[in-house]
Picture 1 (cartoon, rainbow, N blue to C red):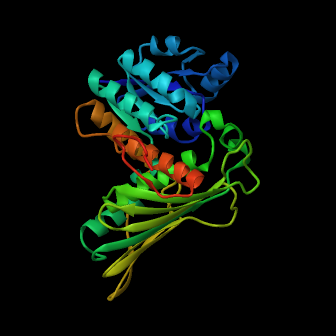
Picture 2: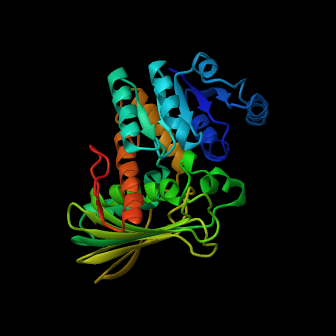
Length: 338
């Protein structure tokens, strides 16, 4: 069966990563693209070899597609996803799933009731580096995990600096853009769920309108693991990394908080240092392969709708903590509550 895709949003991320990942799957094609600007839709379709360009959601959903990829601004995700689900389409949605975890839970419930696949495009859990870390921890290679650190402060490229740093109503700010990814990657690698977060945010000169362009978070997990994460839009030379420290060893990963299959993972124990090997498959190709398998009834997307609720609830709690000056509990069934 050929899966026919419609793109909701003529976005940079679709052009750079997702279009190629969809086309890398057997029996898969992109049928249509939608942008609210007819001119942008037409230009984007021509540039990317897509047959149909439309400017309304109804036109896209009526174009004979089976699934949609949503990469519009965050405030549009809920309405677009619910419309797609109502029309019987599978949904792969960019993070955060919505502006609030309550709305994200509506999306999950609607897809479940309709028997459709809903995935969150958390690309980092598809990286070979993070899967190698997860497997090493699960195999006991660092003993009991005790603490973790995530370094994910980058420099937001000029071509992406629009709504992310100027529009609170669109879900801008570094927490909804990057902290959601870090919360998800911590959950995935550690195989554990966060219970509580304490956070500080800052506006270091890039963001406006009351938005934050930097954040530091301290997380406490169910098993007792504590973690810290640094997210930012303003650091040109920081580099990224992910460390997990256990009773019998440490995992030290460099340059792994990225959309590309790069970086290294070092295991350090009493025996010395060992660089772990891992596959270098394109993160989005792997994500789309699992999504297609889920459509065919085999397994789940690499990040489910429920995973998207977890990460958004965690980000909400971080924002609430930064505002209140107190640590905030994380409960994906209720949203965050201090």
